[in-house]
Length: 182
Image (cartoon, rainbow, N blue to C red; front, side, top):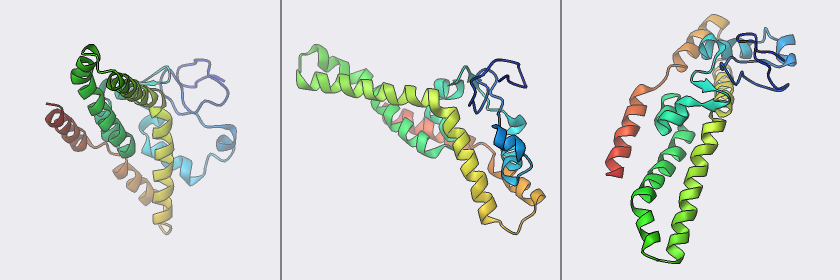
């Protein structure tokens, strides 16, 4: 299977291109490609593309972590990432001093907590795009369900309005993180 946008060879069941982020639809979607849901997903995601994508790594999440999740309206990822990043930061600043002071069990607890937070952050770096696509599909289905009498044009306007990113929440999360961290 090749990406129609950049001609990179992709795995058989890929949902998007790992290189350029272009959305790929499976054969059953292509056969029924005129369904309302997939047309609205195309409107929800500009240019049928996931931005800041490189070889299945979300660069936006890697660089901006929880603030990128809030920016993309991925609230559950943002909240989990916020607290794990805050804890990771606190452990990094204060926790490693306890290891060198020989606190025994607490040193192991700090190391385990540090590794757990690092794992959570790395998990979302690699899975953010897939979770984002699943959330977009959920939101589009919710829009269709909540507006059953609307036609395609009005639903597309609602999808465009709902797909806007939330810069204010991203900035507020950064300020809250800085406030709690220092």
